[in-house]
Image (cartoon, rainbow, N blue to C red; front, side):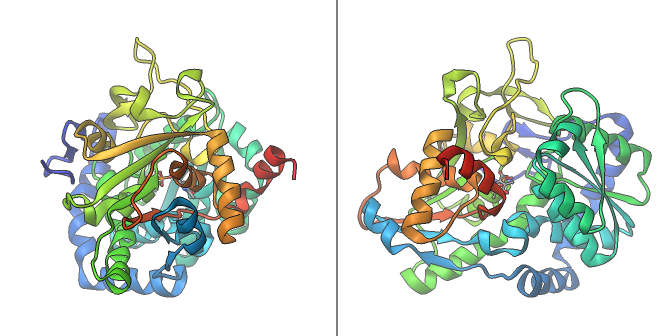
Length: 393
Ligand SMILES: *Cc1c(COP(=O)(O)O)cnc(C)c1O
């Protein structure tokens, strides 16, 4: 079984590029060039230098002693929360801005829901002096005021999407419309391993630095380059794709994906795509998504804005369907409790997305000699108000 993308842009049954005809030239252009450009020595040199000097990589692989003791196994945290801008998303936007420059693009567009990807995109555009337009649902603009302010301060223009439910899906539609109208000078930076091929593979490659570092860091401390289990939360699936990437074809490594069950899988308010999803097409790729029997996409819900997505990237749909990965879903309450516990056991306040990954230790037991690596995808500063309301702090 092959777990990475094939030549046609599929992961097993999932992936591909289901796009309007007017988008063909843009996507085809990207598909022709992304691998070759990303592998060029000059690209790799600039990418690695920026990841080191600007993002702050390598991020530490931290052995969590108190946490390990509590759960009776050996637990390491991969500290993506220490990246510049507070999460893994910057790895991808750095890669894509370097690609855009080499493709001769002078204008960047992006979509954002909670605003984290918008901030990561605005950041690299400021870094490179490139024009940046971020589409965001009008309702999200109201809900995520601090990130809107950050984007503006970084010099980006935030354009409200006024159609439909005025959230992420509508912002995505606006971004696609913009791209169709501006094919020559514009690159569209997608923020997760979703969208038409080649986006899922491209984003996974830029995030693969996470597992590349885990391999050499584990080699040093454990004398082998792999853990028994790798764990990551899955929204669209980019931090997870980066954490799993170099272990996809290593059967000795168990892959664990953690989804948001919101108020409970059967509550009608969740984002547990593997448990509830059916095959369908969203944002240009065939994948698993939550939908009604007649194929309308169901509005997802999670307390964490970053996991509040009705689908998963095609890589994860395939990891689920093939049985390569173990999928666990975690409710809002379980995640919030885990976030508080992580804060008090290790002095690390995680993003609420990230807290979902840590909640599995209450339901999934590991042996005392097993090595578990959890990707600590982001820090919790952005979520402080949600923590305050929830715990009445
Ligand atoms: C955006 C975000 C996620 C979810 O996105 P993925 O593409 O699934 O990684 C997870 N954790 C943090 C901290 C985020 O900001």
